[in-house]
Amino acid sequence: MQFPSTIRSNASNRGVLAFSDTDSATDGRYSGYISYDHNDNAMKLHTNGGSERMRIDSSGNVGIGNTVASSMVGTASMTIGTGVSGEAAVHTVYSNSNTYGALYFADSTSGSARYQGGIEYQHPDDSLRFITSTNERMRITSGGSLLVGKQAEEGNDVGAELRSNGSVIATVDNSLPMFINRKSSGAELVRFAFDNSTIGNIGSKLANSQYRLYLGNSNTKILFDNGADRIYPVNNDGDARNGAIDLGLQGAAFKDLYLTGGVDFGGSVNSGGVTSSSNKLDDYEEGTWTPNFAGLTNSPGYYNLNGKYTKIGNIVHLQFFVQLSHNPAPTFTSQYDRIEVTGVPFPCDNGSGYQNSQGVVAAQSFLWNTYTYGSYPTTGQVGCSVDASSKMGFEVSGHGAIRSQVRNKSFIDSAAIVEASITYKTNS
Image (cartoon, rainbow, N blue to C red; front, side, top):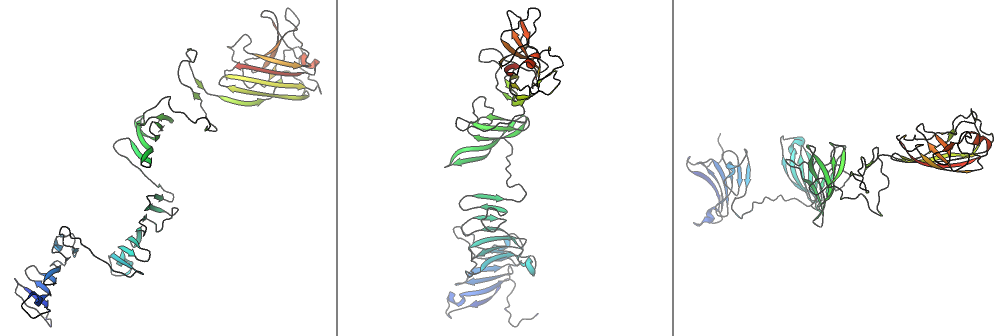
């Protein structure tokens, strides 16, 4: 192939196209020139008296301000800068304030593949944008905030924000917003501070052969032991801390505590020095019950008929109030049987007392009818008791160990008002 103008040189020399601004024998004769060096087959551009500014080597690599383009990674690469200590390599993309400057990475010569990846500086809003797969993925705003997966500082939009004021915001849709993973050893995972002073942290501690989560501040922390299904107080190192941390305080109490087990007060010796086999309160209950009478053959009339109870652990406090209207009067299978009040919510533990339990009775307009045979008394203080079959009876006390049971006839003979209160131990 022949060209209209050809500069011929031998294989060990170079051909030069020079630009001169003088005809004297000075360097001005070639203030700028383009040379082709046949020794290394490189095209070189020189300015300002012949200093080399750019080179295209035999492989097509471009070097601006240096001669080392062929040493850089990749083929057909461009290297800018001298590499000289203290000399910055600067490449300026100059655009109008109403448009943008960009560096694009293409894998085709048509369509969006021409900007498959890229870096854009948008002068209208002064933001720097990063593109992959033709889509914007990251942006640095004019205020210095870093946005990933979003284009505005809006906390409700999916994506991550590292704002210039130090705020970190992560928003996801139906996924995990944050994953923190510490390897090799259990210790602090997250630290919280105010004015650079630590006010709390979250960490991990080896418990029951697995690492468990703890949180709190200094020596006031709680640990979540999912292996044993429990939460307990720990110190700053995550070790158990016994009997030192309160839950709530005066004037700042919790409201309700819902338990299916009980409250264990710990210790094996009570305040009197007596060893206790159990210091666990496993039940508290309040409620109502409806008194009834065994052996009734009708539905008598009442002005009042109600009962209440409180159960704390295995101790029951029982109350009831009955006021007969005698409209109609009660009738029984046998008027001479012992009065037995049924419907008692808890039986008595048989291991307690001569009658297992003792209570107080108050009555008005009540004609006591008791057994009259033998030495049983017919007058005296009336009490009540509950037996193991969850029935309440009435007794009239006498001298010594003598007491007499009150019979059903007492209700038949009088328009009675009877109140009873009793505390006893139950095994229920």
